[in-house]
Image 1 (cartoon, rainbow, N blue to C red):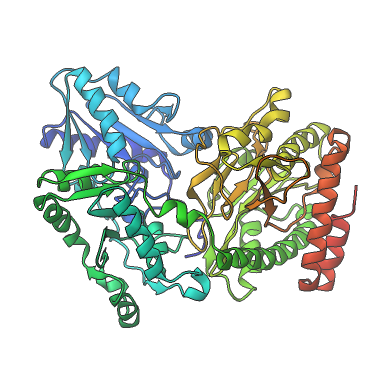
Image 2: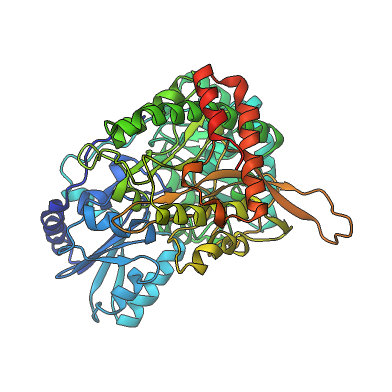
Length: 604
């Protein structure tokens, strides 16, 4: 499932689709309904059959929610999408609000009236989220109504069928640990929490636990499914049997009981009837899952998904795989950069052409499974849209005199990559170079950091922003997200952000991607992936320290660097990084690409 560049966004759909939904709500005696950008698994990537928010509003971003009342509605998105939402959505029908600073709960609190009934799909809202919604409704004297059937589905003509992508086995040679061993460790966690069983709702957790990969959603090898892991005995895997070949079914037979998805809630209710204590993650599990247990007499133990942390801490095999994937990807990327420098100055290249050519260089490796997300190929003002998705309608020529931002990644069986570079096309202004260099300084600060064990991402986030702050600038997204091992390019619980509260641990992989986006002008983002490692002891040092090994191998565009703004230490880092890029990639490059790289990595 590679990038298609199709146009799905139509702001004019907002009013007629809202009218269809309101008619259905009236039939159900409801005064309002909430439409999250979510499926029952609460993942970032959802299948077409669950893109209800996009069907209703036209918004295609990866996070958001709409609220529809009888005479008013709104759409809520975070800072990554403040520009995009206004381009994709009819603001007269769905005025935009900030998902974090102006949350839906505040909006509802100002509008709900006593006696009104607000509906929600209990599988699409987490336990934690419903708790907040219930508080708002109770204060307003309104009723929060759980629905078994989603009213959007009743009025969505031509809704796609649920996916049945084939499942494959992710071998121990790639996973680094047998599934049976992982299951035993998770069962120990379940027992340690005093639970009889744990419910897993995240497909990447399930994929990691059973050493399987799927093909149900774009760009991420996920098998949409649920699992119940008891404290003892075989886990149950609830998955559409059409996704399993005989060979895959046989491989899973000794690990798990396989059942169809419609048996999932029946098992939860059975656990409840037996007085079971069921562990689930309130930030990830739908309220409908908890309701199935408690309505039958069981109880819920709230705890973090026990797979998240061990999945995030890569083992030695996964780390070696990540290094190999980035070496391979780096060579493909440098071939692209060399090609880009030849073609872009002609003025004949556009956003789609650049994205397609980069994908082709990765395909030429012979082992590309997919890109890891839709390439963000942003020319000029489109680069200022943080998570811009180029389409045939929005596609722009790449102009001279402005930076070009390209954020992309690849899925290989041995690792997942994610890299952003901002490239000079023609002469760049002094102001553009200043902005680029301020972002580069933040990137170097993260990459160069040594920090005590127990440090969280929030404690490091300031390093990426401090030089921008000194200039009165900032960026409205996190500095870094976790990355999986041939899994999701956005992985938790680790992150470098103002909200990153999880201590970083050796083996975690995170992105390092500060940016700056002057609206309507251009975007700058510089991203490498970093591996957390234990640092060597320093004479006189008192505490164990950690550091980042940079995995990504590709040069930064020196034509955009204002060297007068770099400190000697920053200059030394940049030169050392470029020397490493050249040394490691040189054996993999053709003569033309190698000659280009030698010039691109010249010491400054």
